[in-house]
Length: 268
Image 1 (cartoon, rainbow, N blue to C red):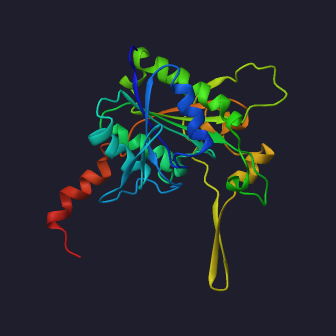
Image 2: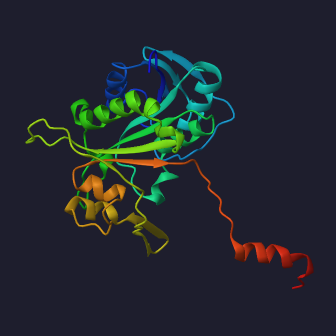
């Protein structure tokens, strides 16, 4: 697509190495304008502000707000001719159906969908052990190579291929490059979000600790997710691409229709 205009945002902040890696990769095939949070706004979902401060940045604009703020501000006031919104590259995977609504990265793509603008959310799976958070792991610019290459490829080809005739946005998750690889790109797998849910809560006195048990299993490669799911693909070293629609989908439910019909005559 000639003269492709991309608005790039994220939730790790405009100065993060993953954002710069994605900006550089996309700049090879498009005119890219950054509209991203000035600071880290991870895991804020689609939180929205009433007003935000904006300042010019060498890559575009830094916003004192959330990823959703950035998309609205960008679409309406800063990059009104954008053909696509790309969000990322996030440090840490966004895998599984239950994670999608929490993620600022994915939420930026969802926000773009409501503007009828195709979007791609891009995240990097950072393996961590039992006592380590992904936020404690230093991830350098080069670690985002697979994620940035995949995003560039999809941004360059997905519009003309008609991908967004059926999907509102793509949720892309890539592994960290294997230092022992021969340089061959990993396989790209088309997936759906995993439904496996391993959140637990333990009460200790007046405190309750919340934990997601899936990350330790991922580090061990022992997960309950079947073939075809996003988490399984990434653990197997593939790039996961889930074509998704913006929430919330609706279906006819005969049982609920029947309840609605009997409501006027009901008495409790």
